[in-house]
Figure 1: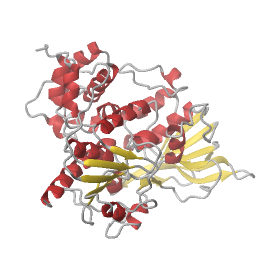
Figure 2: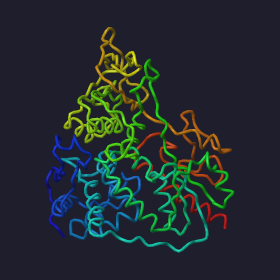
Figure 3: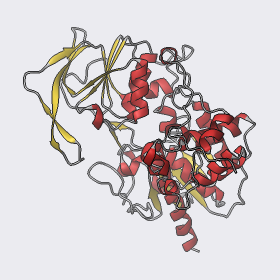
Length: 465
């Protein structure tokens, strides 16, 4: 057994130089070497209570796989992760570990927690770099299930059902499966080749993926059931952007972060050989303070903008974005205008954005979210000189599926209503999870919902005899 490493800090993650990376879409974090991974793995105390596992929505056996890395058994570590997590290379890169597994780590009480996410990424990348592993196809059990949406929730549900022998078909609206992993998260955080390689393992397990299938238009959920699918999982995400409702939002040069990132990521707008129309800007204002806002701002820099501003109505302490993403954005040159709120977008004589009127804010009493409510400072208006405004203030589920499916209920926010224990909707044989149920949330929470739904679908179909 390796000697325990009682260092109070994590082994640093090698990264590209900020000035270099702000001009390209190459991945920012380079990844641990084998030596770095083993050194970090020996910081794990192997707690019997395993609080870190309780913090993982998909229940990865964290101390077990880290122990294997510490002893140099990297493929064995990967095998342990894969028993509960279908997308380890993805989760190792984009999960908010600081509020989940690492947030529960005992080592975090007197220093930094073990770098669980970095070690998960290392194990997945090691196996991929050394030829990968073939995924066994389970014997068909005679039942078939439809999955609507090929994002994190749908992929996880499909993978778990395929392991149990179900014939699973994913109906994906876009030309490539992956959901937010493909259209939302930029290449410099999550290379698309990695996403597709993890999806290819599901195909090896027998999962069929039908792209360009907009359920609710081409086929309805009811028609899927009529076609012999014994259960349907809806993991269609939350891709409908929200806007502020302020004057000027219809001007040329205003778009949602969803649209902007989709054009860059899924439609390869960052590559010169692709003829994808993308706004080319000198000065960009990104309104919002979440991870998507950081992704949009950092992408705008890489697309050639000279100035990129994050405009957020609360203080930096209230920002929902991961600390790592904020840190990287600042390193790369994104300017933060916190305690500022847009009140109007200004256009020129051609109907294009030429500025944004903002008002300064101060924090008042906490609101229903527990964060202090921002209050406008009277007489503090000013104009920010920008030619592009990207709105990143949240998304909601597209109403198409619920409006074309009888008996499928949604709440006032447009999210599908489910039983939280089983992920069953109000319609018989139909289950749902991910952003379609919660609204915009994290990749790993969507995966956890897909996992829970797969278990419930299996129990439901078996109960029918």
